Image (cartoon, rainbow, N blue to C red; front, side, top):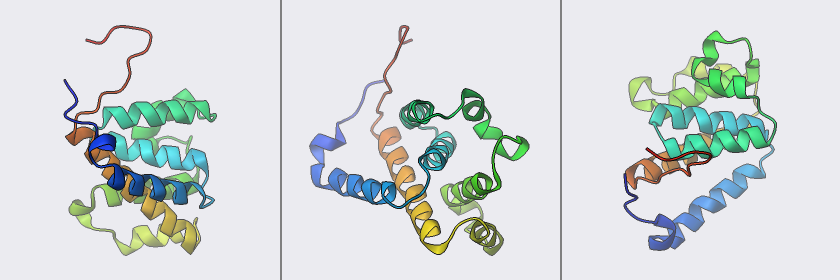
Length: 152
């Protein structure tokens, strides 16, 4: 696989805008660990190897356990995730797969039980942003670094 282009060079104003959204989300007060789980889960659904690599690495760097990362795809069946994380991961799946069922009221109500309105707003922006990045990286074929071994 070969990258198709470097979007940061070709569309610098657009990528600056995305980075500004990311900066606002970072300042929102959402826990960094929760944000990384959301980014990882959306990236798993979207099949974005570059983003999975980047966010798994960042999550570990900030204290996330390998086992929770391994079990993230099965968060519904694992007792390792808190009720707040479950609500966020459920919202992540709903919005990432929005064409399947929309964003049902019961999922929003579940979210309201664990997040205030401002947190819901920023969580929703976070999910939207990672979905944009996933589509950019997959569409432009960005390749994650290879560490400790050879690429195939």
